[in-house]
Length: 180
Image (cartoon, rainbow, N blue to C red; front, top):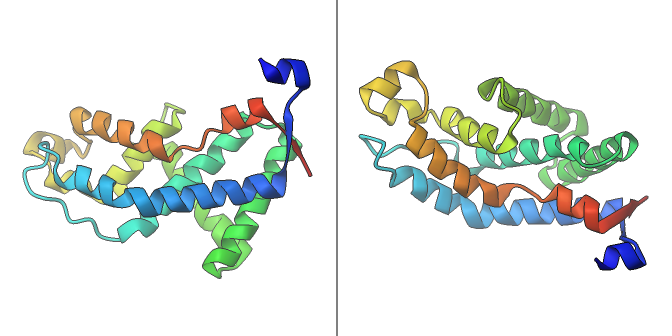
């Protein structure tokens, strides 16, 4: 209501990029153990899954999915600028070349699209990506293992947990006017 009366608050793109990076990294750092616990304690698995690759795959899934959401909520010129700013900052954090990190994130975004085709729901894509990137199919009962698809009950529970890792770009676009 106040945004209608006084207008949106102004927020610099650089500051939003920092907020997003810090929030995402903190969420993964604090929440990966919970996701790992959810996976290991799931009754749908006949053997306890081994989570190989730690939280690095998970972080890339979270970052790729969130970056994929930006164009849905920001104008074309702004979304590209913000995405490039975020990748630049992340390349400094991880001490990796911008082009290499951008390529890795694009590969993950493409992977998210493939595992969730034909749906465009990033939340479901994140859950399926976790399932396939951590090769969880091998720990399921024969029916789902042979089809190499996640048990729908497990996927639903994982979807609910993955919701905590999606940045709220819609609220951000509604509440703030982004400036360079």
